[in-house]
Length: 267
Image 1: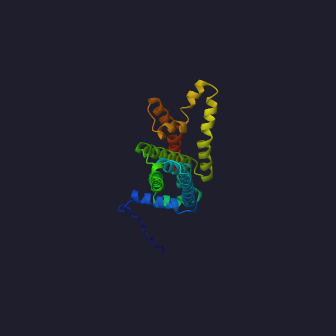
Image 2 (image 1 turned 60 degrees about the vertical axis):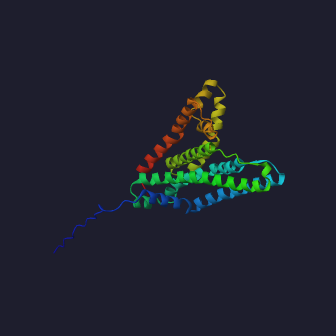
Image 3 (image 1 turned 90 degrees about the vertical axis):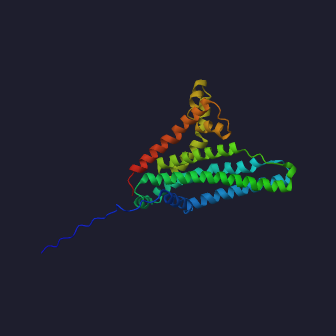
């Protein structure tokens, strides 16, 4: 006697897809809800607090002139050194901690997961600028109360916007290396080698020949980014160098990394 087992069908046609904003919220929470992410953010906060406190105390004790930018851009500079590591962790932690299977099971559309992680990177860049502005106001406000004749509010909205754009590009650079390598230590090492060593090497090699120096300027993203940071990106050649070097160091690695994530076997 044989028994016929009825065939079961799972109908998911009416299932509501996960909203993108909810995916962004999840990825944002994951960015600080791990030991690596938490201690990275804590380290940034501690460093900013120590340096800003030292500047404030030294300024008041020595009765030195102080500008709003002394506090604001010091905080921004410190965060810009370490925050791209968080962009790397956003993408590599899924693979190093073997949580990618869970993430891609809950949201099979991997492109939306990657997009949410990129959105979180952008959110952190915006939060960095806001924190920079607040720290500048607080530090300068204290100096204004103690030594108003030596304090100057030199806020420039253009430089703040330039800082935000440069921070967005730097976060995208870290994210691109992370998505391409999918390995946290390797991506961090490659990022810092590129950011601190490659520009020096390109400059030294470019000094050998004038034509070689002119050519390598199109590959030096950090040097091409500096006129934007200073809000002095005035010529078409400077724009072209920024776009070409950004395409080489951000767009190409990011495209290769996203392709790898979409095709990689999840274990």
